[in-house]
Length: 347
Image (cartoon, rainbow, N blue to C red; front, top):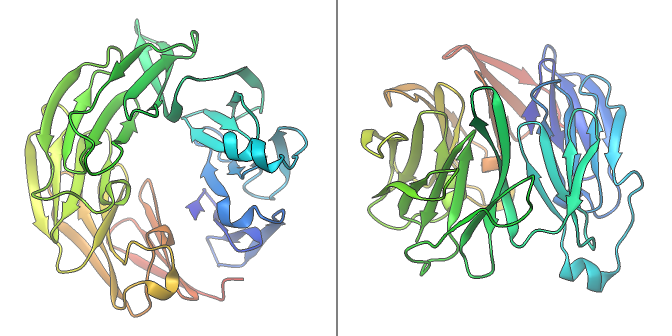
């Protein structure tokens, strides 16, 4: 679920649906190919406001206001043979204005300009890419760097111009699973053993600082951490904490209440969601909550309670807008802490 200037867009079981933010009415609907519905990802392209839809077989750009297709890659979606798809699963990595995409069964990645659909480069990578960075070099010049994991759980980075390994970083421990990689603009944070955060120099791969972000390992690092341009956030044992990206120092901590919490963040607000962590709505907790905090101070701005269970994916945070999908109701928060409620059946 995501929010553009005028519409709310979300992927249903068989279609991508857009509703007008002003009145909640249906704006457009796009049917999905069989098998794509449960694996589709949708993103908002920041520089032109269009919608990017990525499935197992194809990446498609849609006009946010009409739902019309602008471009697709590959131009014609194809179903890959099962052995090839198992060996080369689909993968999509979103950058600021680029998409690194590999359709199921394809051995090569394509780097695509998300505004035009133009293929900038195509080739193999010696690791599984997870993020795209844009590093500032010599003032206004930028360098595109892709970061990811290899089978030995080491972090690698490569410059787009080379498609070879630029640097690699070996985590101190992987007892509790693969390290997680968080990125924001040119900032790289690696969380290993679900408990220790290390900031890396994105150009050289060297450690800038390292510190624990919880008293115990986090249950789901991807959902229980978040990062904006200034802070790293982590929640565990009913508390959310903020750490400086400059030196890793803990800046504040706020007690949220009992339950399992996950995080989303905008520029100035941190959204804490009390849900089961499961994407199965039937198993989501009752009396779920969404808590908005000031990201700089940790002060609680707003606390909303819901009788129906929420999933992490039922909450969408962009800029100063937060949309919550609760059962057949949409709750919109705008210009904190004002609340606007729009009712209507989600089709």
